[in-house]
Length: 478
Image (cartoon, rainbow, N blue to C red; front, side, top):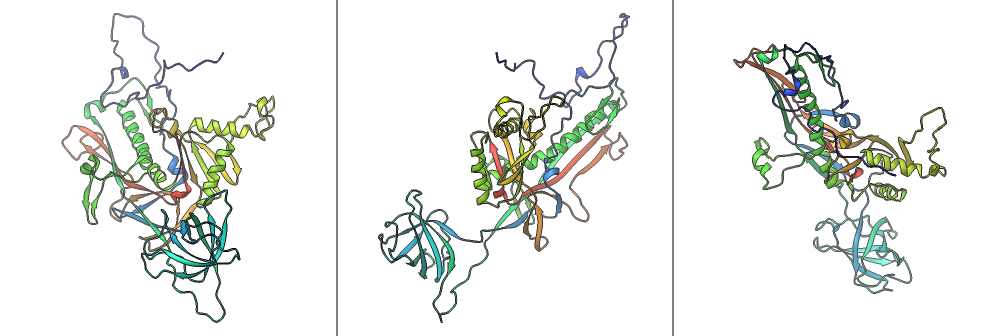
């Protein structure tokens, strides 16, 4: 009979991240009439293991300086042109026709790419019809607001589709008569400009001079190796570790403040470049708005991944991609791959693993190839119950990140430069480096710059993440 995971006893979400000393951190039994002493363990037990969640950006990105309130970059547009909603008033069988460009992908006035002499392929948008034509463009409207062009069909049967049928047209070449002039008009490169702005992150730890002189009986330790019997050492190091995590999670979760929002009123500031609005475009925001979104569950079948691959074909077609996933999506991918083995149902042979009686059964996969290479990695941030793990709504199951770098025009450098798809820009100049600032104020702990009988450790960073080629990313929402 199948069991179930009980809710209690569960896990603590906020073990000791408080601004006050907790009574549970100190011995309170000082009864000298009790002749029996407890046997104590000096060293603090690390029951949650490594509690930090950062590391994602260090694996897939890079850091580089910027010295402006605004970061701008240009990404290439498409090389070829296709219009997906064109209609003709001509009836089926006509040898010539005038087509009108419409739909959401219609160009701006005077910006259509079709020119006289080009050859086009016209396809009925009704999948079952199979109706197509090939034609040469004989005229293009001279009125910038008139998005029409005239064609002459190559087929003797003339126009294949009925009048007013929604069609797709693409340019595949050109053809001119002997002794005629050249192509009329030229096309300008289509660049798309994106921008982002850095945000300022701060934190602080404070302890009084008296408490710094108080020794504890527990030997405390943190993930970065700091140890000692002074409790404030642990709190200071945990503040630093927590700030390190926020440097990454803020780049993942940041959103720009909407016009009229409370955050805009509270955090917007003036600069030499004008008003700098609150917020920034984090990775999730950029991918949700400029990338590809899978929603309503986890892709757990080959058919699901085939649809993902079909979308990647329409985007940058990056050969290698990394899937950063939570535990549930990781297991679903393992099960999907295991099902491709004819012996998978027996539970003894998974993929190409040499599972024999002398070794532990390996039921996991690190990657697979289907059109593209997909490498799978667990993302702790999505599993940690104090962060994205165990959310009832707004959950993210994973993200697909293209490997490698892309070429963009850097306006600061004034030339094309190779950049990782994901990278962080931090504020810095010759006199001020705001990548990771920390300083001590007060009159304790070695600081002697104020009359405050305490030590205050300050942390500051100013940074933004740049998601380049977001159309190559996938986010998998719950």
